[in-house]
Each structure stands twice: as C-alpha cells, then as structure tokens.
Image (cartoon, rainbow, N blue to C red; front, top):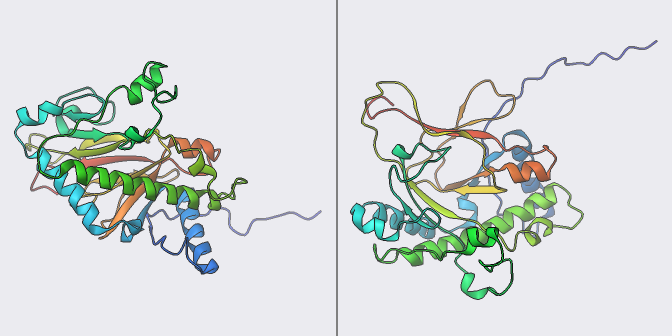
Length: 290
C-alpha cells in the first residue's frame, strides 16, 4: 500500500518582529490592501508583535509632543507630581505600589483613561459608578491632570484620541485578516465602550549594584488586553519577546518612525489560539555595561 512520507520532517521557524506599512489598507488598490492584511496576519500568527511604519499614519509632531509632555512631568519635583497621585488614574511614584509585572523600585508611572467621558450618558449603568463594582473601577474617578508642564493635558488628550483611531483601524485589519463574518467592523463595533488606558513609564537609571548581570525592569508576561501600542522616546531598549517555539529571547529592533504593536490575551482567546499573545520583558544592564 502507498506510504506517505513528508518531504520535510521538521521545519525551522524563523522569528522576527516585522515592520509593516498599513497605509494601503484603506486605499484604492485591492492588491496592495490585501498585501497589508497578509503581512499583519502572518505577524499575528507567528510572533504577535509588529512595528508600524510611519507610526501607522500618526503624525510625528503628535507623538513627539506626548513624549515631551511626559518627560517634562517626570522631571518635576516629587511633591509636585504627588499632587495628582492615584493608583487608578494619575501618578504612581517609584516604590508606589506592588506590581506583579514591574518591580516598583524600577519605574514611575502616569496614566489616564478615556478622555471623552463628558460626552457619554453617565446614567447608563455601564458608565454609572454606583451601578456595579466594574463601573466603579473604571469610571469611579476622573482623570487627574497635572498643572505642569504647560500643555500636558492637551498633548495627552490629542495622543489618546489618535491611539483610539489607530486601534480602530488595526481592529478593522484584524477582522479582514480573520475573515470575520461581521465584516471589517466586527471587532471595532464591539470595542466602542472600551476602557483603554494611556500610560507613560519612566525607568530611573540603575545604580550598578547588580554588576554585569541582566536585570529585569519588566518581568516576563503577556498583556491581558486585545492590543497594546507603544511609543518610545529612545527606542525599545531592552525590550525582548519570546514567541512560542523560539529557543531564546529576541530583541525588538529599533526602527525609526515606528510604533510597536503587540497582541494581548484577549485576541488570542478570540482567535482560539490561532494568533499569539507573546511573552515579553524589558531587561537592562547598569550604565557602562550595555
């Protein structure tokens, strides 16, 4: 009887974090649009991370202003930053709270949630903090905005809105890549009432006490979200990913004029594990030993 013998018994998979230009997705060229979808699908299936060329269409000025505002805030005296301290929305100092992912001694943080809550119906139980513990968690506090540096709130609100728009675009690409029966807006329609956070993190310099050993500024983890978009002031220094099946950690490349996208556990769940929510970490060596 015939015996099937595969031509290749084992295939070595080459993992990399690709750079993808999504500008043609909404264009008039169906071939170019399909190429965008194919590239995003492959990245989501293989590594769960990809870089967006030209920041996914977000302007350089907008990203620069948000990063500069964040840097200006973190450089303020601690007592001034503590005026907007909050474990939910606002400032958390170094050693400010326990965190299973980031050692508290190695970062400080500022965050905000949705910037359009003044326009929603707060009598809707979904948004009413008195209606449920979940609503209290997400909508029980207003965003806390620092008085300095000048323009901080405006820069952050503009950036938040731009990230909402970019995320909707990515969700439309994801839907087409997955051939969702509801069409391109399948995911976007289901994420209209999202509770996304915008977070800035600053990692203070290490003191060198650890010698030449690698120290994890962010422990290995996956994100419990659908998608995360990251901007870097000085590139993804020390950010590493460990795709399923990879033998070792891979450095995320430093590519100018890009934003980094990584998939979270929600998309992995939505796709029945067809797409990756990849473990990643941030490592650092003391200054002078990089």
